[in-house]
Amino acid sequence: MSETPAHRLLLVHAHPDDESIGQGATMAKYVAEGHGVTLVTCTAGEMGEILVPALEHLAADKEDGLGLHRKGELDAAMAELGVTDHRFLGGFGTYRDSGMKWHEDGHAVAADLPEDGTGHENTFWHADLTEAATHLVAVIREVRPQVLVTYDEFGGYGHPDHIQAHRVAMYAAQLAAAPSYRRDLGDAWDIPKIYWGAISESRIREGLRRLREAGDTTTFEGMDPDGDLPAMFRPDADISCEVDASEFVERKLDALRAHATQITTDGPFFALSNNSGAEAFGREQYRLVRGTPGDASGDNGWETDLFSGVVPGP
Image: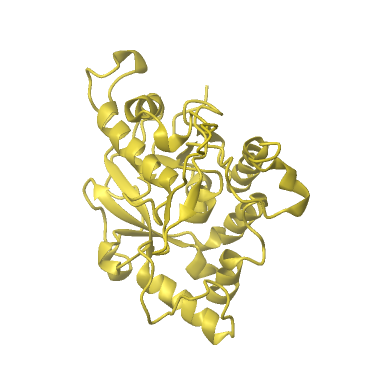
């Protein structure tokens, strides 16, 4: 029987590829350091766009096989990052990608339900909150993480599944800590620190500036390094921690490549890495929303370790 790692991180994401985009370098770093890393993915991303022409037959309005394919992509991405504990909320197929559409203000919103009543009943956006959270309670009490990472209340850019993942994760953290709630799921566990994934406004401005100086005007088209930015980019005052995992950038990029139906190697993430350098692309930021800050000796008075200040142990 393997020994339980002294430090344990739980990440809750909506679809395959979200984890690699947001925290891929951090995940690889903590695995390499011997920490426990558990990923819970809430849906299989059945409604995602397909960037590989040969796989267009998997689309939801055709064979509807994208979810199973993306499960394989997630397996490959986790192998690149070294993460061996990754699960789907409630088991694969329990919740389905809800889809989305773009609002005129530039952020994502929930997609319209089909007028003919053919919509799927298990879309994540319409999941019962307590039921979904209880699935996660079982994972929390089993893994006993000291740190939980999920989205903010807007899901970064408004995707309904990101917002629902936020709600489920935050509610599950409360329920898991209540000794009288579902005793059959194990002993109560109160997660010491909860973070929301974030992107520093100053870091993205720096990256955009390098792109524009290099003559790239199409990556993140319309974003001005000195102008207004979408809500997913947070003022530095909101950031609590920056994990420098720049030495693991190649693993992050390899994980992104594994999500081939969703991410292309000539897309914005690879362009940003090429022009901003591995160091910048491998620094991932977080907002501490529960718990006591640890050693804030990094840039801008930020923590440099999500586990800073927590007591290791079983």
